[in-house]
Length: 163
Image 1 (spheres, helix red, strand yellow):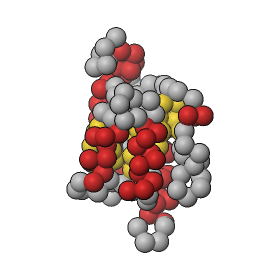
Image 2 (cartoon, rainbow, N blue to C red; image 1 turned 120 degrees about the vertical axis):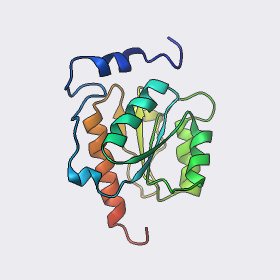
Image 3 (tube, helix red, strand yellow; image 1 turned 30 degrees about the horizontal axis):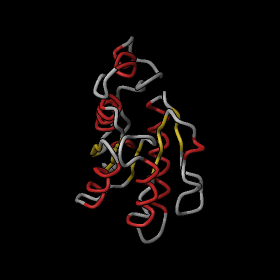
């Protein structure tokens, strides 16, 4: 399987819908999910995952950018419009998710990060800038579970002063 081969993820996406499995979830979205149009950055070296997450979150009303690795992500984070939340893979060729997270602590410490990986959570940096463990979602994952965590973190961020 090549890096751009959709593999298991897109196969499962096309299987009998609707389902709650891989890249599954609700086809519609509530008014609550459409409010705000937060800007998400998806960082993953697997094109099928990036595209599937992009499609899903765009349908939910989010603005979505994509990056293949940590270096591309840092360029997007430094640009406009500002990124409200990052969903990143952990292990990627070149500049990986761990390096991205550590750099974000310095340059973008208020941007929440969710790690989505097939590798163990033990590879994560110890904690986020707030001292809490970083949210980790294991691959394979359900889209609804990712969306729930995105909404939770965006809500928490909106409740913090000075952001």
